[in-house]
Length: 321
Ligand code: NAD
Image (cartoon, rainbow, N blue to C red):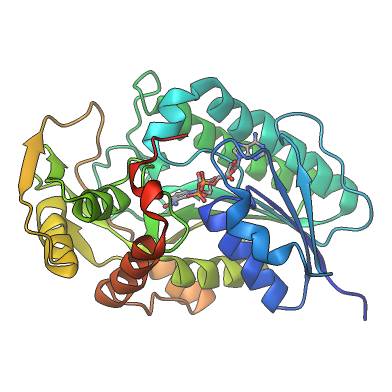
């Protein structure tokens, strides 16, 4: 039997690189694609020596071409953290719209099944708690986060249109906050920000009064959920995340205990449109995919902290890309 071939866009990023590892492990031929705008080849350098891996350095928002057959496409190319998409708002809108359109066209041409990476941000600052897939969200299109949220909402709409109009096999995963090795320390998200501050001996910055909640999913759990969704026959969006929620203040305290830092928490004003609460309802993932997260926050944080600790000292002081 010929090997299944899968294209993974955003392959050099945090999630894309873990997905490359997973599909190589499942015996597929993986074609990674990335323009390295927020990603890093270091995340996939261990794959370059493998026969089952190839890499295309290109921008998916422009024309994309992959020779040979393709069975699957995972579209993960997009800046993902506020610090990135606020700096490159137009590229963020383009990759979510034009980039997704290009991937859908390629999937159609190759008769491949495509899974697109959507996000809990499509729920905006949610008025329903926890968020299930039937909730339409509360997004400010002209707020600072609008460039990301609306690009992802458009992505869901055009993916669904390709499914209904062209009969393309599509899957949509709504990813909630995920963490683990290969995140960037300086990507502005709470978890690497807290660990980075602890490692540099700085106070931990909490925005607002810290009562806003987040739930953090360990990357291995997310990857397993995506794998199951890709192989399922379900075309509507599915939440994948860890419902175990915590306030940001408690989370900062957890990081202080984990790292043993002597520093304290300092409070700064809340950025505009910062969501107050985020917690996935994963009933659908449980029912349709038989999936639920397995890695506790304590376990996942330990592995992630060890990863950040093992990085060269100069990485601790690197400015965002
Ligand atoms: P990341 O920034 O680490 O990875 C994104 C990758 O996409 C990078 O390697 C970047 O260089 C690449 N990229 C961006 N624009 C591109 C373009 N035009 N052409 C080719 N490559 C391009 O981010 P991540 O955390 O790995 O996120 C990956 C995907 O998952 C994104 O689509 C993001 O929206 C989604 N997501 C992530 C999370 C999370 O918690 N990490 C949550 C929700 C959704």
